[in-house]
Length: 105
Image (cartoon, rainbow, N blue to C red; front, side, top):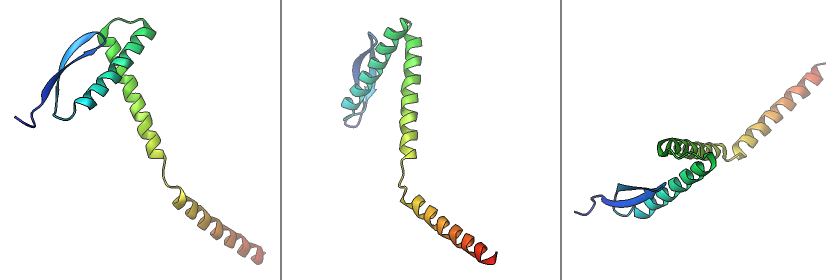
């Protein structure tokens, strides 16, 4: 029986759900439930919308946007030392070419 998913009863936006959960993943699932419930509560409060399906879609879109923005930010942070070396090499070559042109004039 080990390795089989157990079930947890959770509440999101006032509704109860029974969800499967692999062993050892209960804390992660509960953290995800809190995140989704908080986002849905916030959206329902701000929009005064009480239709759970609409609130769920808006929460999913918000969470996806936040995730994609964070992922994009992580992709953009990189080691710039290689770029700096290439720029310095190009600068050296350009200066050498300009010096040569001045001698030819």
